Length: 453
Image (spheres, helix red, strand yellow):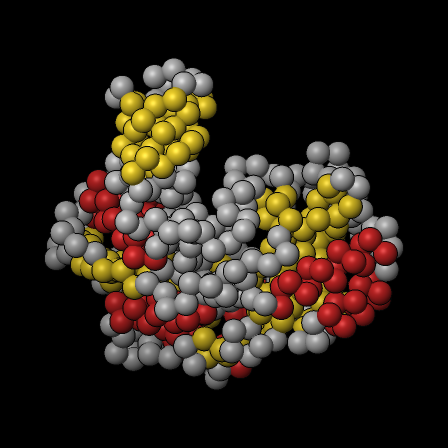
């Protein structure tokens, strides 16, 4: 295989990010835009030690699952991965990805795996993060082109809430009117970095957070008026000073410009206060399905002590607390813990819950050292998975059941293998699609302690 040469290849699989996989002369070739089962003409763009990357020139024999993309920004925008495939193929590829990871990495030997797809594939997201960038002398907002930090201006995104369009446009008009420049991550100059929007799927409340490279936001009163005029359902507008280098989205402090600085929403029959930095699943309806499965796997009878690591705003913790004797939540983000405590009060569960603002590893080790013996441990870690010290501490506490909620099949499988080596068996696993048209997939697993472990 040589760079800058064309090859007619058969696509034999899909990578974790949705790219097609071919093999040329024994080497893996990744092909964006190609689907399994297709024959494609591909130009090899670059060749690494073990893999190569190609550009799709022509589909010579199309998959029956190929569809015409219904978004004018695809594939230039890096937000969606499967606009060219029907939803049946997308969910099957995600299901196979989870099953393959659990068997190949985790050594689980599963024969099958259920996936619950989403009834709605558009308009499902309750959170939007628009990076802002100067282009040709004017500010633009949209999403990064795949693999780059170049913003593709997006007037309307199919998977975002409709209110986002008006808010985005209002902020850009305000920037143009008052000559407020976008932040340049290369030079560290300029002001506006991100337009962040969070909307309550049930409440309809909307929060707008402006991340800017300054301590005081210029023309903030005019910005507030512009946003409220464009989107009357906005209930909170927040400014987060962010003078960090690079491309981090939010700062460490949040200053309300209008409203309380948070919104509320209802999930699984519970009411939650949501601050800008607090974690909350972006797909409300599918999150309810995911959490109900986690609760089913926990099999609570009303007397158990449950430990919820990586608890965020306490969504899973409070769902557990309703059916357990006691629930303990751990989260490293201070604002999220404040929200979690407030949420426990709002839902009448303060007397059944405790929350710790700590690193999950430190908290797990502390509980293990104190001789804590929770009946059930629930983990919902970030994409990097659970750290080895948390695995060790969890095993030392010896819960009867561990419920693992994951957003990355590879790190889930790695951690399941470590838990299996420490006396736990994978009883069941199910995938739930919270991210239609995108490559991400959620999985919930139940592991039980084996006799004698």
